[in-house]
Image 1 (spheres, rainbow, N blue to C red):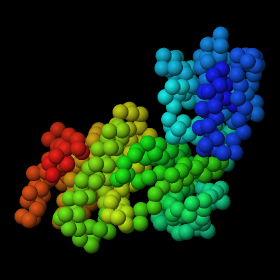
Image 2: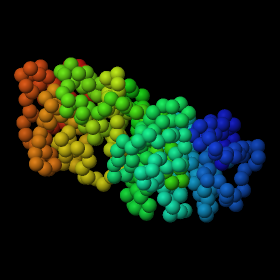
Image 3: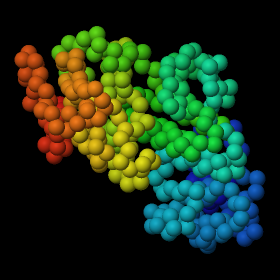
Image 4: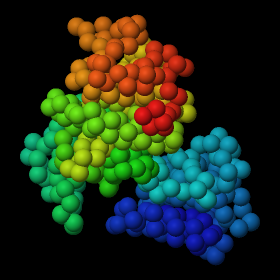
Length: 396
């Protein structure tokens, strides 16, 4: 149900919703034409109420308060002004947006989170797709399963064909983990990954086509990168020219990511894919985080990432910023040129120790022109490193 006096705004919200959920049944209500809803209005029969701030002679925030006082009222998403955001936050609707700054992707992710959160309370049924040995879950409509590409602790990754366009895509599907508290965090990170990548528009960042959230599944459809990953390329040997070309492209993608206030936090050759035309694309933003967000989905001090490419500060669980990703890229650049990792030890903690204490490795003489750049990327202290990924191009 959409409630607001402005017809254009109701139509805008309706467009966003039906673009994503084509079979949604929506009722639109104009309080200035049909009359204000009575105090006993319960919202019954609606899965979610989208409440605008314009109600004629009534204040939208007061209407919000009235709705939230009702027992068993459906989830309410409020669309207010910048001036009333603090008050709305105190009242506590299920979600709220500024009505003049609505991003389609952010709205859909926000509504999905609200619906899933309410379902967790109302039902103990599974939220996620189960074991997929026999193919993609039947609720993921519009895709034809081709083969499994891999899996992680929480998700499976599959090659599929979009039936409407015959485009090959990668489907990342959240696994079924009913009743486990960690499933909630996994789902939040899953939606965060979609929201993070979907707002990026850069040739060296994987393209996202679709987010699907159903009663018991969630999936992301993204670009299929058919040239293999950088790890395989390094194993086969990379020319100096190609290594520098890849460095430029990765740095450009990182700069775009950082400009959006996002850190990758798990930059490694396995998360850098190639297309057939030789261009690269960053993938796997599952560990990415917004640099300015204080609340962590994960526990503070928990170490994420791959030790071989981890900055000293990340390895010790300290605060990280853009310069940590630059350090990881420096480790990758060294490996692209030499075929060797900058630091090796028998244990993960041994590698982390070397990142923080061992001298920066020297490149072979034939690559000595890049040593100064490498030193600026692999400096132990963030303050001694390049401060922006854009500076890598300047040094080259």
